[in-house]
Amino acid sequence: MSDVLGRRDVLKGLTASAFAALLGENAFAFPQQKADEDLVPFLDTPRPGPNRLDWETLTEWLTPQDQVFNVQHYNTPTVKPEEFRLEIAGLVERPQTLTLEDIKKLPRRDQLMTLECSGNGASKGFSNAVYNSKWTGTPLRPLLEASGIKAGALEVVFIGHDHQIEELRKGTPREVKFDVPFGRSVSLHDALNLDALLAYERNGQPLEGRNGAPLRLIVPGWYGIANVKWLRRIEVRDRRYMGRYMARDYVTVRGEKRGDQVEFVETSVARMNLKSMVARVMKRTTGDDAGSLVAYGAVWGDGTPIKSVEVSVDGGEWKPAKLDVEPNEKFSWRFFSCPLGKLAPGKHKIVSRGINEAGKVQPTAEDDEIALKKTYWEAYQQWPREFEIS
Image (tube, rainbow, N blue to C red; front, side, top):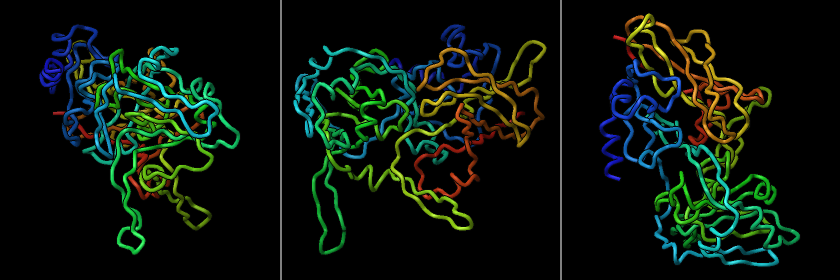
């Protein structure tokens, strides 16, 4: 780990040519990037802290562990692999209790996926909570089917080892305190059709403790909160699960216009929204185009195919970006590049917007679906970034 952190410290602030000198000509995360390009730093973004994605030093399409975020709302449990047990219970004909070795003997599947915190992008200080991985584990659906789902089942609840004392009706005569585990649920239909995975490896290595070891749920195309860590029980139920992080927190409050009225609607955070961002601006240093700029970035969403990405500078026309042909995986981010030409000295603003095959266009912060949102979750608005040419 110390070698990885040391490399990250060295890379911070280096130019692309320095990347190539240290790591080789193919060291860039963005395939279109060249060795004769120097980094133009963004002015309005603080440097990321530990365990956060660093777009300026990222050299891999699959995010290295030292740039992987983790968020937990209760305690951070330590579960020894040899003591691990997964219970499948509730409305099933054949309840099961599986060890980690039992699970590893089941059919394996890899799942490439971008995982993002739903609050990522809510502020300039919290804009790096996203990463891309190859998860390895066993599919959820065969386990549920082998357990025999009973009639009347509506939801599947995923319970983790992490827990905390919660309070209901605080400050009232009916105040209630109880110790509750972290949990999230999906409908039975979604549990059987989302290609969910019970994962025990990331990028070919065992999960680290802070990322949910020894077993976690992976739901392709859903925000991080739905991907339950430190998994210990899967329970099939006949009614809605209303845990704190489905019914009270991680609930998006959004205004929707009904004629000349605005009606506020609450929805549980679930599927990821279409999002893109400019990750780097680079300046060519040699050749006939020396001094010209190129923008590089990434786009991702819920698995709906990406149609295009466009980039605008200083409020000007939208220019089409070039999407990298490979890798092109359904639930993983795609990288893009866009030549900007030469810009006048001074400060400039750049922004990107993604467009998917369903016709969805990434909104601005002024569009109703963002401007009328009262909570910071699902922060998928366009993200303008400022840089300066001297």
